[in-house]
Amino acid sequence: MMQDVLDAFDRKILALLQRDATLSTAEIAERVGLSQSPCWRRIQRLREAGYIRAEVALLDRKKIGLNAQIFAQVKLSAHGRTHLDEFSTAIRGFPEVLECFVLMGPVDFLLRIVAEDINAYERFFFEKLSRVPGVQEVNSVVALSEIKATTELPL
Image 1: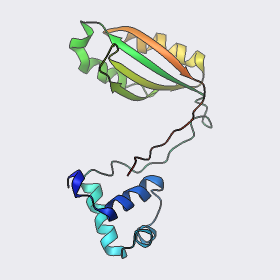
Image 2: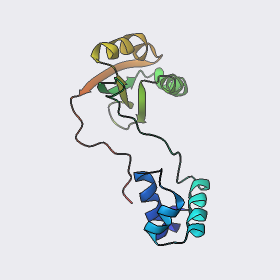
Image 3: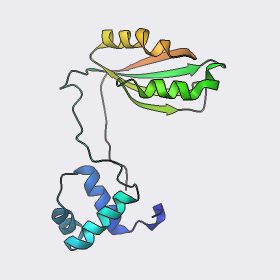
């Protein structure tokens, strides 16, 4: 299934599921205007085609004690850029790093990191992040508050 093959029913189903993955097939079918069997088949097809990557519980990071959110811009040395796989493997192994993006521009990566507090981030920075081979420079920006945070894609 290619992106342009999604019809209005598929988009409605995906919109509902990304808002609340606990909805039953019957509830989804009713809301999108399909009977239950065709709706179930569509959901299965969307899963198999990779449109639905996972169904998870989204946790409140502050309630579990992760009060600091930091965005770190990482620049690799010229030598470090030849070892992107090693950098990627190291970053994937850090549970504190929630997201890592490769960038075009003056820095190579943007990381979204969570920690209990700034002291915990400082420990992470000195004990883990700054020790990754090839890291030349890290600029950290602390988020003070969150204006918008969503996992919903605009459909």
